[in-house]
Image (cartoon, rainbow, N blue to C red):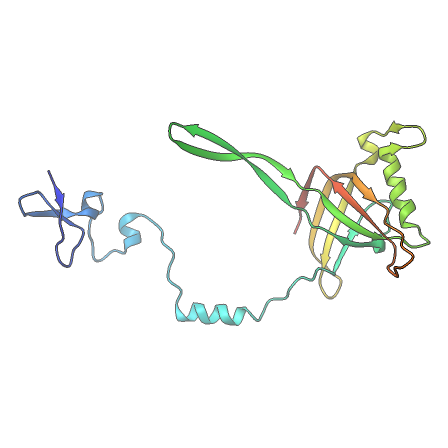
Length: 213
């Protein structure tokens, strides 16, 4: 029975148990030693190439060539609400569920359901046009307090567009948020000691989002 031994310049050599070297670990695994071929060619495996000095130099110069996106350069479009009132917004985010498949003493994991997380937006509430009234009109499509009636989803769910802009005002990223509705809304607080402007915060639930570019 073969046993592994150390053979100086070839630590992967192994013997047949009586001191005769009969091959290498690569040979035993079906890999033939061929100095004319690279390790990738011999094994059929693709290993990443080491970056050359030229690659590293390019990476350094490229680090000064890109233009960042800015958080304050965006427009959100919601039907019935003036876009210039929407002060801030979270971007879409999602989680993939995890399903565990048990097998004896190991586990295999696969994707479960995809869940798109709620986003929060903040709006200014000027005297006119009234931000509070605009949000309330949307909220009333969900539920009418005066009568206690709830609306159909085709009435209160909206398609929202979220665009990030460059310095010239040109959209450089665009999302469509499908089936959005108000999950919760806070029309703000009042305080005699405060000089803050009035704002409204709303948490929006939605079915899914799609990034166009």
